[in-house]
Image 1 (cartoon, rainbow, N blue to C red):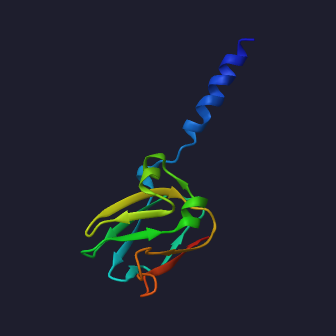
Image 2: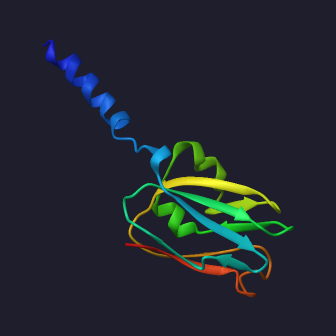
Length: 128
């Protein structure tokens, strides 16, 4: 009977031990510019923690919308509130970091502001 409480403690502690070390996750810079993203194609490794470093270089606001990508990824708890309906909003000159573990697949992203995607503000995330 004494083993049951110990086993319970081990099982409860296991998820905490399995958390990734977000501090050592490589940074992946993504620039939001006037009707453009740089790079337009982002390559990530499945299951490897990364920090998306979104930088809005424009004066006006933009967003990074990748609904399917964010829905499939494991996003760091502290960063979940930065994403609303698969979108990260950035005011002019703003930056935002999102730490996550991507899932394999090919995903589309775009700026959801009126006409921005039509003018070319879109791209793809490839996770191998």
